[in-house]
Image 1: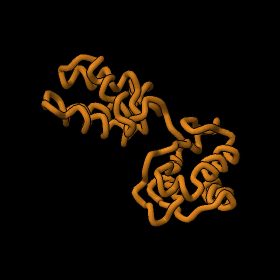
Image 2: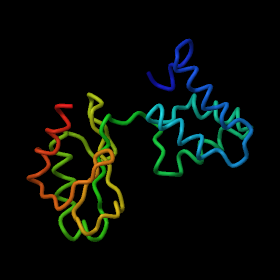
Image 3: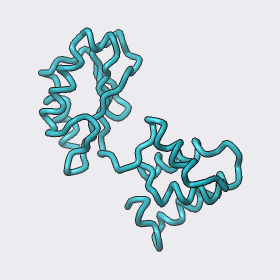
Length: 161
């Protein structure tokens, strides 16, 4: 169930609870958006409109914040978010080849989600695990010292979940 189809479901109740928690609270836009995304996986246009209404700010202000920060997703993402580090240490140690291997294996480009909704692929500036370069995070699990040959084996573990 997405944030777009809330009416008449238990999802409506959850959204109402989230909104009520932050209603009228100055400076609560980012925490409110974070909680909406944590629950729904992304921030829909309907969720942004509801946030604007309860915080008494303009919809354009909510959209401006949601679209400015890379932590927020404005469309559904895959069940497994794959973040491939492109920082200096990872770059020097072959991150481009790792990103290409994930892209080839999944049949998608960075910024895209597989048609089955299982995986999303992102390139990120730094994961903060330079000693393990090149690194990738899938969800909250970090994989380090990768080679393109490791990619299929790692994905197979997630494909079977």
